Each structure stands twice: as C-alpha cells, then as structure tokens.
Image 1: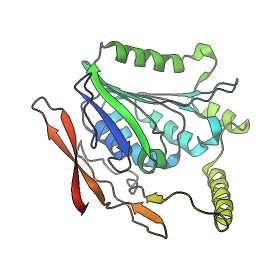
Image 2: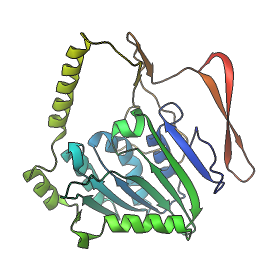
Image 3: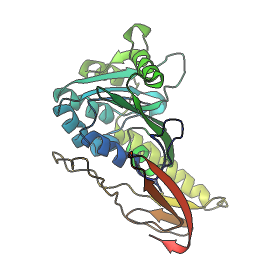
Image 4: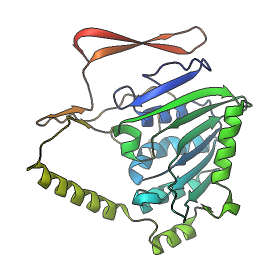
Length: 289
C-alpha cells in the first residue's frame, strides 16, 4: 500500500491516509488480485452498490480462484442499502461466501471497519475507517493501519476471535444474509433502496446550499472524484498497481483532486532488502504533480 510509514513494532506494517496519499479501494483490489491470500474476512458498518461496483470483479476472481470470503455488515443510520446487500448476495453463487448482518436492537451502532487477509502462513490485518461504499473506498478522508504478521500471532488470533463473535448466531444480533432475510429487512424498514437514500442526500445538500448563501464559510473545500468503476464482467489486472483517475472540478474556494493533484511535500519510499518500505517526507520548492 502506498503513502505510508513502516510500523516499527512489526517491521511490516503501514499507516495509510486517503485520498491524497492513497485510495483504499485501489489497494484492496490489488491485495485481492495478488494471488497471495486464500481468505478474506471483512466487517464494516455500511455497504452500498457504489462501493461493490468497484470491488465486484476482483472479489469474484478471488472467490473463483478458491478464496474464502466472509463479510459482516451493519445496517445502522440508514447507510446500508438494499442494492448494497443485493450486491453481496450476488457473490454467493460464485464460490465460498458467508454473509452476515449485525444489528443491536438496544441501540449500539455496529461501526467497525476491519479487513483480515490470510493464507497458510501469515495474515494481513487492516483496521481503519473505510466502509464498502464508493466514498469510503476512494473519496472520503480516511485513515487506517495494516500489519502483516504470522498466522499464529496473538493479534491475528484476537482479530479472528472478534470476527467470529460478530458472526455468532447465538447472540441474536448476527443473522445470516440471504434472499429471505433481505426481504424481511426491507419489509420491516431496516434498510432502504438507494434512490430513496440519494433523494434524502440531495434534499440535505439543497437545504445546505440555500443556507450557505446567507452564512459565512469557515473552511476551505477539496472535491475528490472516484475512479470509474470496472465494466460489468471485466477482468481485474492481476496484482498490478493501478492508478486512480477522476475528473478535476474547481469552483470558488474549492480545490479538487482527481486525475492529478499538486502539493508541496514529496513522499519518497525507500525499499529495504527484506521488502518493507520507509517513507521519507521531503519539502520541495514550488509544487509537484
């Protein structure tokens, strides 16, 4: 993963920041396509079709190659949508996929963002702030930490135990996601369709824009565009580092990041012989691209 520093405790960890240093969705896709990992377990608060559209080709290839996928998703705060859950269900016909919905009726919000890759010898644990939405994968300001450790390491064991607790059906807060249960979620108002969600967001933006004409802006703005989602049925590039792209929009008082971005600090990475990297921030004169 690009744009990070090595974790001194393990010698093989990375701190990432989005969107200026990296795009988490691109890094996640590269891990799926690397051929290194045999299993991926995910726990996130929200999933939408927008995020799954970017990941689905790589997830399908990962599963078809024999990879095991488990996803636990929350439904709180009306941010997980019908179409997002349908996108997950579409993966079940490809191979070994286990899907769960977690919800606490007492009011506690299910809010983790945890990704655990593993093979027979080691695991890669990523704990951050990225949900399975387009904004979470590419556009929002997000951060997290990833570490690669032996499979038997206590940290990996604890992560696996935590994921198992969130998918424990005996708790009553975890339910298997299938077509029948999705119908129940919709009938009882637990999730909405994306058209309704988009309409509500548009109304909020309209109200905010109306009030902005009479109020003073206290902050600068940075508009970040997402790359185009892969075409349906397209094959992901096997393990190559892909470049994010997107249009650059500029308006009064608002900067934008998309296909290119400029800055005053250049991050240089020096690769050690054992394969890890050290990031060195260097201030440069003027701007760079």
